[in-house]
Length: 336
Image (cartoon, rainbow, N blue to C red):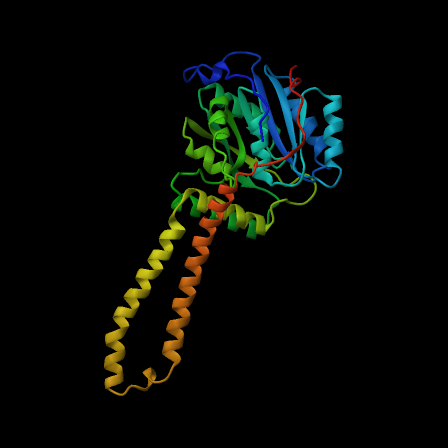
């Protein structure tokens, strides 16, 4: 589906590092929304408080990802009352990463900030991100130094996830970093050319390169509502991260094959000797059954891994649009 036209690259994309001082540049703030009606007023108030007194023009893109709790109507009402707010309404739920992608497609700013609507990512950190951007960094990501309101299981699995991804992927994705970040217009233009369906934007932001730096912050508890990333969705995001940036699962299947072959090679002379001396442990079908089950399990795991990669190829080959819009944001607005 055709994307709406964006303004040409701003001077920030062409300026050398360390020259970010042009006043009244437009900053786009993207907030994906899925059933966040209780958080929308506070999100709007805090963004207004942070950006309203600054030296930047700004726009707030609220991407409604198929909400069913009245968030859609609330977003449209906010947009009617404030020209800074641009609503992007999906025809159905397409997922968090696709919602952020839609925001990137329609953002017009020289700098683009991605933030969650649950207020765990504080809007008050945006000036710190902008300060690093003015220093010449094209990607400024927020590092979760503290995590409040999360169970020990969530903290443990998140820690394992980030460190596993860091070790096995082809790009070095920063540890303890979510989607809360600032991107320069040049980075966004590069990301917008990457149209794969199974998206992991944290990895994509690391893959594109440019000058990157982290800003630590304390991640607060969710202001209202429940998490939109239960364990099942987190697992799917982890699979997308691994398969999108690493061949390690495919290599793992090969390692299993070598281990199985090596164990078999070592076991053959042992079994022959034990049978010749009449050892009872190697009579009967138990050993054969265990070996067959082990090898069958390895083969099924390998087929499953191959299936994940083949399924992604199939999704890409269909060529469907990443998302379908029910309402497109107006081309005007977003200026102070």
